[in-house]
Length: 156
Ligand code: ADP
Figure 1 (cartoon, helix red, strand yellow):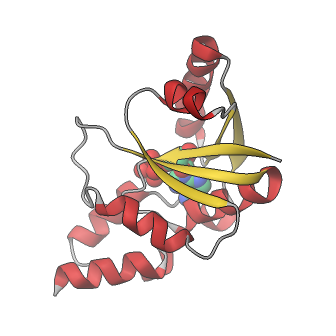
Figure 2: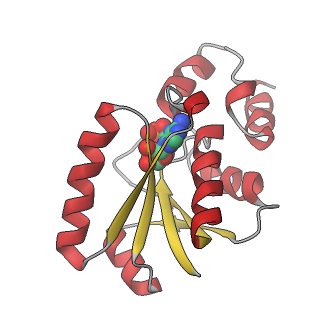
């Protein structure tokens, strides 16, 4: 058994992320979910993203959560993690992930495993959900219950 990293912005976590994390855990035994904290990014859910990921994955054995700041390869090296697992939806994901994978491998030898998104989640993205949410749409089918509760609390 080895621990792999599933990194992302998770703004917010979706059922698509949940599926990739579950499958990575089933394949490798143990997953650390890394929630990116990038000062340049204007997150809709801010630091609440980390709480929402933790709450959504609380009952899942073999999964832990941590914020990530700085370079992904440094974060992994400090923790003895040698593999990153990412979800692959469509062409644009592939183009970006291929560049990132080669850069990370070049920097420290960090390997990347790309898992194809489940057919039912292949078009789902946090970006689109944020737009729908901002305009008052119902995203309940696409996010874990913790996120639904957070959205309801915001709307008051
Ligand atoms: P997004 O791209 O939706 O804003 P993130 O930056 O949090 O989300 O993405 C983190 C990782 O999760 C990436 O590898 C991305 O490809 C993957 N991912 C995002 N949405 C899905 C989905 N619906 N199915 C599978 N993987 C996904």
